[in-house]
Length: 303
Image (cartoon, rainbow, N blue to C red; front, side, top):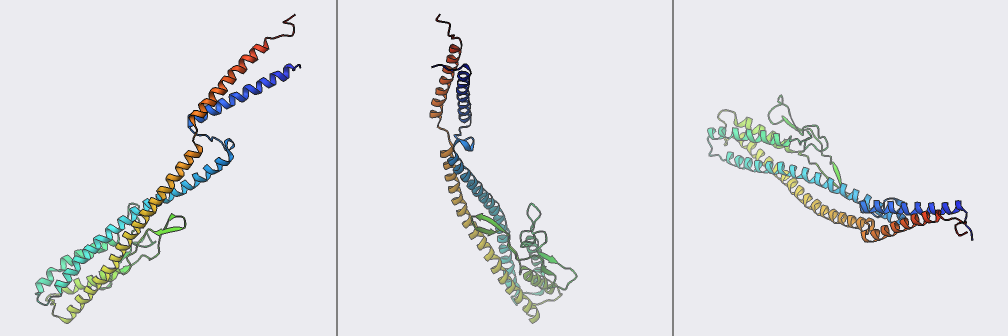
């Protein structure tokens, strides 16, 4: 059987090209450690890896959202806890002020700490974060939640300028969590404090005066309302942080599982690849030798 020279050369070139392509592909796989460099390498497993990669990206976004959320909630909880401590001290001071045995000078001495408390609560309520957003304005983050009108009468100078809407953050598949808080109703305590300070500033003010006692009693009730309101928010924030911490741990387990699956599916078996590479290298060398040897043969060489 005779083979045309052109056919022989074409066959040899195809063999050389095939071996060279396989050597190049194996070399690249070994360099990256990946078995699948293109979808055509393994269409089925390529789709599986793609799905796992998308899921891993989504899970990682959930975890990033949770990390940012925890930071914001922790900061809000800290400020609210400080306000609870301040209000507790202020309530104790009001209990003392309500004692009828206090002289006018005793009541006058309470004006300074009550003023400091009022201003501190106002300042903490209008706290901003590193991005310049107010923490306790609901979704109106560029508006100070506590507004002050110096032209109004004592007891009506403070008002709530934010809203009670929630800024929801996606922390899981179909799971959202509010990242913000509001301090609506704190203005009532500030106004009561303001009125108490104004009342005690009147010369000769006495705790035995029915009008003064009524204002002190109303302010004392305001402290109880504000303490209940802020304390409940602190408790809620603590509970939310526990929940999202558990959720983050679940996401971490899913992420680990995804990464292991991606590695198992797409990782190259170096031992098998090295064996294949050696086989193709040997075949390539043999093809070159055969090609060069046969190329020197002639039909007339035996004559």
